[in-house]
Length: 112
Image (tube, rainbow, N blue to C red; front, side):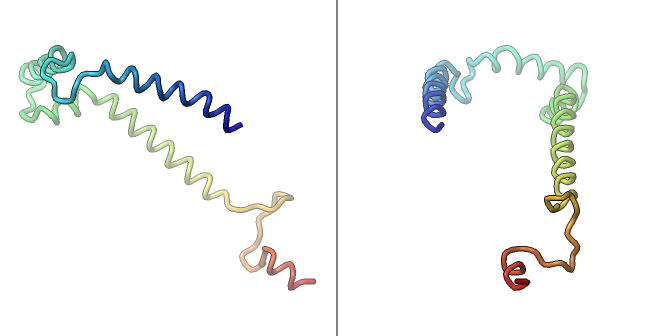
């Protein structure tokens, strides 16, 4: 099973390393995001949103739905963890052990 995983992951890693060579450098002023998207966001902020802080304007207005979606995902994950933890331990017959009952190998060996 491990060899199958390696056979699948090694070519995937090689592909990701290969295509990462086409990514623009960090901070490159000629990158597509800096040439096309950033000037539009700055103009939109100054003209339509009228929030003096550019970062707050982008997070609150332009990326508002994205932030709402991320919050919903985190909330759902937290709720799922709480539900799993609230379920608690159960025996094979589906009943819950009481707090006073001892279980485990040491309690079983003493009962014999």
